[in-house]
Length: 396
Image (cartoon, rainbow, N blue to C red):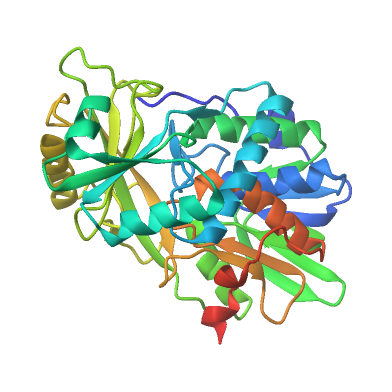
C-alpha cells in the first residue's frame, strides 16, 4: 500500500550512453545522500555522474518510504546545525522542483521525568535559541490526545520539526539533477574502484569503465565492501530494520499536520513514529532493534519479536490505534560503533569522499550532506566542523 513514486528519471537517461565516459566527479549510490551530492555538484556546473546498482527509488536500501522525521532535537550541537542547513536545502529544492517536501508538524519526545536524554535535548535547543515546551503528562495528554503519557513521565515538544516526504524528495532530486545535465548509470553495480595520480576508475558489473577526477562513495550498506577494496576496513554494522503501520480505530485525527512525530526514550532502545502520510495509518518502529546481516540483499522476513515489541508500545502509548498492524516494511541501517556518520576524505587519498553510516536517522540531513561532500570533493572547506564524523577515527 506504499505510494508509488513513479520513474525517477526519464527513459532517455536510463538507457543513455556517452561517447566519452569521463567526469569531474562520479557519485556511487542513488539514495538520498548520493542524489543530494549529485545535485550539489551538477548545480555548480561540474560534469557529474551517478552510478546505482538498482533502479532509482528501489526498495532494497535505506531511503525509500512515504516519510522521514525531520527534527532539531539532538543532544549534539553539530547535528542541530546540520539540520538548519538541511532545512534551507529542502526549501531550496522545493523552489527548484515545484514540489512540497518538508511539512512542519512538530516533534514530540517523551521519557520519565528528569531523563538525561530530554535534559540534553532541552539544553542544546536552548543554546541554539530554538523554542520548545516541556509538558507534564497531564498537559501533553490534553494537547496531543493521539499520544498517552503515564504519570511520572514528561514530553518535550519542538514545533519547527516535521516530516520530509521521502519518495517525493528522491523523485524531485532526480529530476533537478537530470535538468542540470547529470548523467545516470542505473542497474549496474560498481564492482571496483581504483585510484591513481590522475583520478579514479570505476568498473561496473556490465563491463563499463568510468573515469572521474573525484568519487563520492554514498552506497549505504554496499559501501563496506567497496571501501575494503580501497584498503579501508571500517567497522560498519548492517541491520535489517522494520516498521509497521497501524490503522486509526476511532475519529481521532492522526494525519500529518494534526499529530506530531514522536520518539519515546523510556526504554533502552527508542520507539519512534510518524503521523499518517501516504499509507493510511501511523508508522511506528523500534530504533536500532533490527537483525544483523552479513551482506545486504533482499527484503528478508519480518522479525516476530521486534513486531511484538512495537505492538506492545502501540497498545501502551497510542490508544486510538488498532493494536495490530495492517502493513509492515523493512529497510537497512548501516551503523558505526559510535552511531555517528562517516563524512570525510578517504584516509590516504584526496580523491575519494566517504558518506555513510547514517544509522537510520540521516535522511533529514540529505541536502546538508550533499553540500558537505561537494565541498570535500572539490577541496573546499566544509560548512560544518566534521571532527565527529572523520573516517580516521576508526581507520587508525
